[in-house]
Structures are given as C-alpha cells and as structure tokens.
Length: 141
Image 1 (cartoon, rainbow, N blue to C red):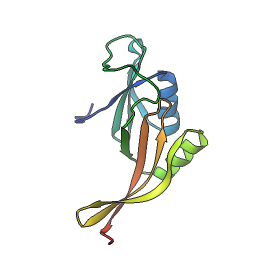
Image 2: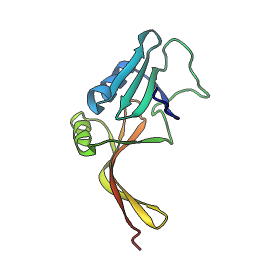
Image 3: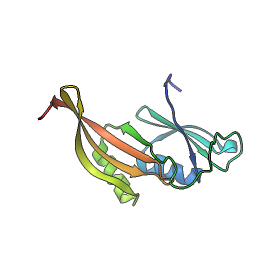
C-alpha cells in the first residue's frame, strides 16, 4: 500500500458500477481486488481508495444504516495532473457535478493557495473534489 498514512474505505451499493466510474471514467488503476469479498483497491496518481460492496460477504464496519447519498458531510480532495481533461470526461459521462469547474483561492497565513477544481458525486453520492494546483500568491485584501 506504499506506506500511505490514510486510505479511505468506502462502502458502495454496486462494486461494478463504482469500478466503471472510478476506473472507466476517472482513470483510476485497479491495483488489486478480492472478488469473493466484493472488494477493490484503486489508485489515481498516488491517491488511493478501497471500495467494498456494502451487502457483500465478509466484515463490514457500520455504526448506522447506510442510506443514499453515502458519505454525508465529507468530500475527498484529490490532486490530479490534468483536472481539465478529467472534468471533460466526467461531464461526458453524465455524472452529477456538484460544484462546476472553478479557480478557487484559499488563504493560508499571508498567502493564498490556488486550485483549479470541481466537485462530482460518485454513483453512491460520495463527493470528490478534484483539483490541479495553481500555485500561490500574496494575500489580497
């Protein structure tokens, strides 16, 4: 797992549909899977996720019933080399864009850090904020 300190594991309703989105549209690499457990490990430019079918066999960690949209209150920020091409693929695939393509600057101390970004909901409603770094600039007053 390349020594990552945090790798989210997402329950999904249909592992096949999720893999079509993450691998087929987003461009993730399927690193490995355990079909007997309805589990897959994926990677996008070093950002890694584990997906498991919620109703699948094996151990599941739940504190409440799953209801769509999953992952309420969380969005995953994922840096990619070419956010523009990714945005075009996601739009062509007809997926739900939550925040359209934008340039956004975030204050950090006396500077601003820039992201070219968009937010899309995956088939289960998890929010993914893909971005390409725009660098930094002095804080504007």
